[in-house]
Image (tube, rainbow over all chains, first blue to last red; front, side):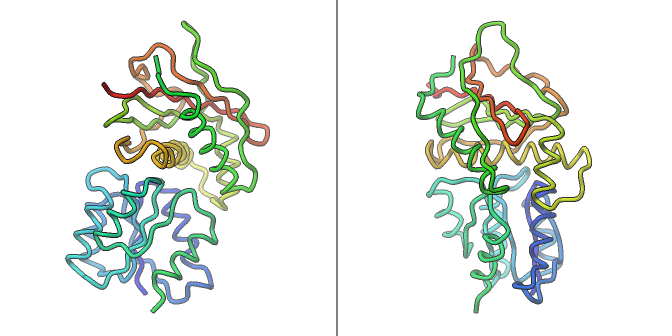
Length: 122
Length: 154
């Protein structure tokens, strides 16, 4: 399964990359790490990932807009939003645009692995 | 002057305690929260991260923490890259998380920016009000400051 990690924080990207190698997530292959929605869309078109972890508050292009555009390009892409924005309308908006899950920051290692397991479950 | 109520300040003190508790199983403690006194310097440590707030509220949320505290946090996250860039990134992400979590209380109309970070104080730090709220945070043996400088937009 091809995974694209999108977050403007390098530390968060590195952390998600490390956790994606967890034994509970077999066959997860990281195909890219993007710092904003615009960079993510370029990588998305090139790599056609199956799964995306998506931050929301990012420079240039935010995560809700990037989610909408990715779903338009590949409607079976699985998008897990990973964001600190803890109000309900924002989560609902991301889900409405095509995200399959929402994980609030700060997250524990287990929470991220479980959230990824849940969104990729057939 | 910041016109937030005590319960609204508590949103931020709870968020900072939760952040460290969630990531390290050792919540941060709030040593005190006060309205900055006139002419008093805001406590600034090695790295600072600021989120600008717009929409129905305006102002900023700034976290400033010592290098050793951020390094210790990175160790707790199993992060081996402790470069200057990563230390700044971490303090920015921390400020972003605290402001983002506060939207659970303030709602989506409190719009937040991406973080601005700096070694030491953030240049141009005056956001207009005379007396922001200063929340002094303690985690392990380290002290940090969280400055909440927000008011309702008229």
